[in-house]
Every structure is written in structure tokens, then in C-alpha cells.
Image (cartoon, rainbow, N blue to C red; front, side, top):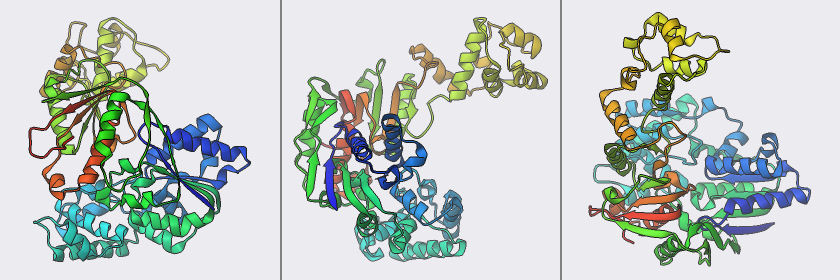
Length: 506
């Protein structure tokens, strides 16, 4: 057995390196079903599958072991979706306890997160009981380290017992149960090569899964990640597990994403941390820019591709409200556009019709769902959805065939069903000169955690944190979080200083 750790600083082509390892294995005659590529998140596993399919010509059936660790456990345990706790189950548990469990109910098996860490009271208790399980700690130990003033240990034990009883009654598992049962059962196929991507984000229980069960079944093992991007300490992740995973270490030395100015700042921020692998890595190109601002309103967002990063969802919400007031079109990571795509499509269709252009029946079927009842009758709306699929139609056709009462002089907001607030916002967007009809918005808002692995020409990073995070005092963890944020920039990094006392200092 050989074990190697590959350290991939931001933009150094870690996934490319791992796909090259897969190719080398195939070239030496290793069957695809003897290659395991496992990752913390579905996003990374999916990217590996797509890259392997494109570069190596491997189909999905041949990549049966390209998956997340918990989906691997799910598969090996022979489970189905009915055996897994879902949002409705957590809602019922919350009702039984009289405690809201909002974040727990939103946890999905495809996002790499074994449990959520929300601010609802029930979520706080749920986080502590799951932390105890994945770290091998007692409830008492976790409570003494993590409890807020409004929590009590008696209630924590009650939440723990109710959830255990509910799972027993319904014969269902949560994501932590899957890993625990897999470790006990120990059912693992034999692999010639095992690649574990994003290994810096694994909790102690997942490391047990690898070391005790999967690792003994593999001949050649690669752990890949970047300790400097270890940002799930709240979930019980200990970066030292990754740092100590093997004796043989390789550092990818060239960043193809970061320009020199951004690279210099990022290195300055991260280099003083304890518990990290020393790395010599360099930018492939000179230039770029690091720009400081006192307020987000000082940043010129009128052109270019932008990724705006906030530490928390609450801060991201404030940013979204500010951009709406300024008339910018944007989309939220993991959510929708600031204007509904259906509304945008409806406006596009109407503007084309007003120019006497032809529109397809498929477009009109979507259009029919958001058209105001004041400009079309019920029978006309039905006719609009049942037009000849082989034909195309103009505004005159719709007036004659579908009883459409609007003319080319009717403004879009008298045709499309929108609220007054939406109308004002869309009008502001159009006044700003934003294109609402061509692809995704060029501005994206995200939390730093959700943006991990992403990149953009221009990154705007807000240095504001939250009272809870600041109070926790996890300086190293916070440094890594903001390091991840600033290393998303391909050209320019814009830093907005915080006006509050809860801020990250560079």
C-alpha cells in the first residue's frame, strides 16, 4: 500500500492532477470499477465524473465509485430514500419538542454537509448532539465548549433522546447514522486506487470510515485538498487529520487563477497560521489588483463579472437589498435570480411581440402563466396554451386567435403579472442598462462557504463577520474562511471594510 497527500492551493489544478492519476491508472490496465474517487461534496464528485467522461471517455456506469463518502455508505448499506430522515421528519421532531428545526430540515445528502448549524433553538441542540457523534465526544464535553447562554443541558439530553426515539420508531437514519453503520458493517469492495478529494473537510468519523474500512481495501491511496481551505471547523473538522494523513506529500506549485497581487495578499493572510503545511506556490501571471473600499456603494459594479462574498446569510441578505435599491440584476448561490426567470422570459416574449417578431408555442405556453387576466380571457388563455406546435405567432395572431386585448403600445407591466415593488425594481434594472434577456446575471451573491471551488474575474469580499462567530474566537478557522473568499479572484479583489465591531482584520 502506498499513501500520498496532494496539497492543492487555490487555482493550482488539483482536479486536473487527480484526473491525470485516473488516466495513468487506466493506461496501466486498471479497470474503471477498481478506481474509487470519493469526495466531501457532490459538487466535487460530479466535476470529477464530468472531467473523466470528457477527457478519458469513461461513461457513468463505469464510474460507479465516483461519489461522496456518505453516498458510498448509503450504497453499501443497501438503503433507499425512504430510510433517510427528510425535512418533513425534522419538522415533526421540532413539533414534538416545541422547538423550531429549520436548518436541520434543509440538510440535503448532496451538499457534503452531515448536519446543519442553524440559529434556531432546535438546530443549536441538534448541532451539538451531532458534533458529539462525529468527533467521538460526549454531550457534556460539547455542551461545555459550544453552548450559548440560552441553552441548557437538560433540554439537550431531551432533544437527543426524542430524535433517537423518533428514528427507532420510524426505522430511519440520518447522515451520521449511515457513516456509523458503515464503519460497523465494514462492507467495502477491493480497489486498486482510492482518491479522496477535499479531504481537509472530513470530520473525525469520516476519517474513521476511511482508515478502518476503505483504506485497507485499496492498494494506492491519494488524499487531496488544501489545509489552508479547511473551513468546516464548526462541524468538528480538525485540520490535523488531513495534515497527518500520510508521510509522502506533494504540493502543486503554480496557481493558474490568482494574479500576483491577489496571491501576495492571500499568502500574507494565511502564512502565520499554526497547524498548516508550508507550501511554495506561485502565480502563473503578474498583475491583478487589490482594491480597498469603505462601503459597498463605493464599488463600481456596472460592468464585468462579479462574485460578491459575505460571511453569513444575514450579511448576504443586506447586500441583496442594497443591490436591489441600486437597480442591479443578480442571482444568489443556491437560490434564484433577483427577478424571476419566468418574469424575465415573459418580458422578453412581450418585447419581441411588440416588435412584430415571431414567437414559438413553447414560449407562449410559459408566457400564459404570468400574463395578467385583464388583457386576456380564460378561454383566450386556454387557446394560448394549445396553439399549433409546428407554427410561430405574431402579436396580431394572438389578438385574433387568443382574444389578446393588449397592443404594441401596452407597457410590459400591464401585460406581465408582477407586484408594484417588482415593477419598480425591474424598471430600475432596465434604466441601469442591465441586460435582462441574455444568460445568467453577471453579478452573483454568495456566502464564502457556498462559493468554495468557484471563481470570478472580480471578487468583492465583505470583511464583516457576526457577533456569534466573533465570540467563538476561532481565529484560525476564520482566517481560512476569508482566505477562501479572497482566492476566488481571477483578476481583481475588492475588499469592503466593516463599519461594525465584528470584522475580519487583514
